[in-house]
Length: 183
Figure (cartoon, rainbow, N blue to C red):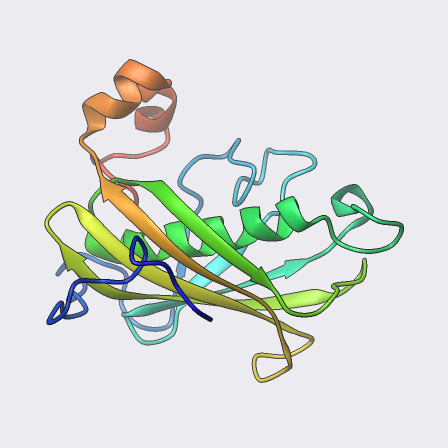
């Protein structure tokens, strides 16, 4: 994948260490909000991604393309695939215990993804510089080592919780968590 300079970390930027309170390797990550389109269990047409961290530095998730996710007949909509990539990348910043939002997402579509296909998603961080996190992800068809159907690179920006109070519903997020940021 050829990434733009906006999603490539500056030279010498090292991948960050997971936060001391981050979920340990082998742990499932919970939804950050039950109505989230990407990971929320209470979102009827959502992606319902469930994720875990196998090693404390990457996140893996599964997503099965359903009827509601079609673009062309019996094929996944490209925007839905981009949403899945955005979600798994967003889940990977859980490991930092800081709130981030998507600043830029670049998505490459390599293979068509039929309805009924399970995509095995994996995301990781290439580096953090100031408030900017540089991340990547891939989605493989049928198995964790299956053919790559979609790749993404992203720039996420660290925000404070006032961002959600000003632009969203902080009370709804706070009601689902007993601490200030995502798990």
